[in-house]
Every structure is written in structure tokens, then in C-alpha cells.
Image 1 (spheres, each protein chain N blue to C red):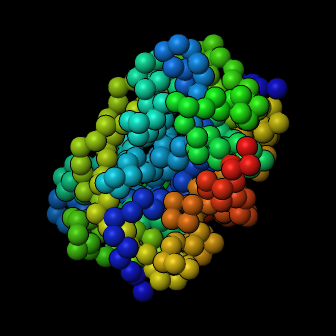
Image 2 (tube, rainbow over the protein chains, first blue to last red):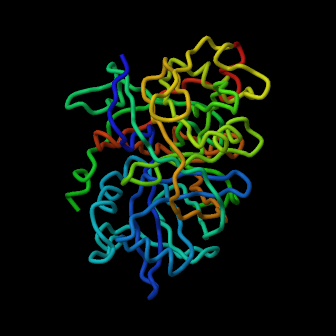
Length: 182
Length: 182
């Protein structure tokens, strides 16, 4: 039985991306973002959405470039911390002891310890953007408290390089909790 | 050791989304897309990127609306078929025996058998779009043939509703292969 949930940001799976930028003075910053992904195949382009209040938003406008570092599970604590804290008040690289590497291709840093990096500069492209008017969910995927249960939804993951579908694996941490120990 | 791969569309995890639209005459169509995701929290908005040659691209321009149905693993065959075939030449609902449901909120159909649906209409929003200048990968995550191995990368999945991190699970199918039996 399908149930109306109202307009919500319910895309599964959502990625966990670490956006690297420099501010005007050249200080590196990182933030964790899930509202982003590939938006064009040729040339390869990514789109990310950041709130205006973030340091990263100001940095991208100033430098017209950013990197996306994709972390592995083992860095869940640092990644969550990158989302918890603001670059306006915290040196997140110093706090986590992770290493900013200056890109030789774009005016932004990436995280040395993370295994996959995309170096990006601003371009001019168009996208279809749709306002979500409602979300509808089958009752079978709704868990405790009315939230979507990803273990019941079992969404598929697409792997761009090897062109395969994967399932979702084990729970590795709670958002804005895993990073609190840093 | 980090290795340069050139500009590629390497975001992990990428979602598997089924976009539902009507053409001018009201015929329902679906296509599978992975270049999309949430682009705004307030109001909730999604962005999807489609090539101009697709029937869905024309349909969205004509109707200014679309749905995103998120399938479970068990429909990997139908979902892959939705990506393999074109709505210009194939009635994908008839071929897969899945059911188009007319949205009461937006001018687009969704897939009855899929457990999560977002109903969307076109809006006007801005996004940062970055052209990917290069991808860099640690050699430890590169598998056979030089492709990224998601089992070595172990990217995290974000669950928007319950605010948790998950790992990647088991392999469930090969793209443009799983759907060939339909």
C-alpha cells in the first residue's frame, strides 16, 4: 500500500562526498555534502548544492573550483566531523590530522587519505531541476518513527566504471554522532 | 599511491533512478538514470540530467513534470531494461508488465510496483556545476582493467530519512545485461 509522505529529500542511495576548497587567503577547507552527483557525461561534470552560509559556498565563488574526495568507510568519523563543524570557526584538517593536497589542475585542495578524487572547475551547463511536490512510499519500507528503512527499501547502487548494480551493505555509523569524538 | 585517471564520471555511490514522464499525447514512459539527486533541501528539489535524444527529455519539456521511482533490487531486470530501450520505439510498461500510475499532483506517471516515489515539477533554481578536470584514485582501489573496484573503494551511503551511513552490499546485476531477458 503506497502512502503519501509529503515533499522530502528522499533519494536513495545518496552519496557521501567531501568537498575541498580554498578561501581567498588560501586556507584549505573541507565539508561533507550529500546533495550532489554527476550531471553530464561529456564533458564529465558534477553538480553539488551547498547552502549559502557555508564557508565552502563562499570559497567556490572566490576560487571557481573545488574537489570532491570520496572517502572509504574507515574514515566515517572524520567525514562526519567534516559535516558537523564549520570551516568558519574550525580548521578541520588540523583537527582530524588529515592532509590537504594542493591540486595541480584546479584551485582547490583534496584529502590525501581518501582513495578517489575529482578535481573540478566551474562551468556553464543546464540541468532539469524538479521541485519535489510529494514523496510516496510503500508501507512495507517504512520503519520505526515513520522513516524510510533502507534495509527494507534495498535500493541499488550504480558503479559508473564497471557498469554494475550493487546492493546496500552494513550500517557503519550515525550522522552527526560518529564524528563527535574528534 | 594516487594515480591520475583523467576526467571521468566517477561518483560513488551513484543512484539508480527511474524517471517517469508522459509525452504530448499522454503516453507514459520510463527511463533509468543515474545522473541525478537532491539539489535543495528547502523546498525539496531534485536535479536529473538526461541526454537531449531521449524521449524523457522531450517529455519533460512538454509536460514540465516528472516522477522518480526508486526500485528495489528485486526489479533489477526491469530497471536495466528501462535503461536499455528507448521510449521512442518501445512501450516499456507493456514489455515489462509493470504498471504506470497517473500522479494526482504532477503531470507524470510513476511505477506502481516500486516502493518509493518522488513527484516533481520543473522549478527555477541555481546549482554549482563543476567540470571534472581529472579523477585521481589510489592504486589500492583500482581493479582489473584499470576500473575502480567498488568492493575496494567501500564508499558510504547516506540515508536522508534516518541520517545514517551504510556500506555497499552484494553484487545484484550487470548493467545492460540484466535486462536483456525481457
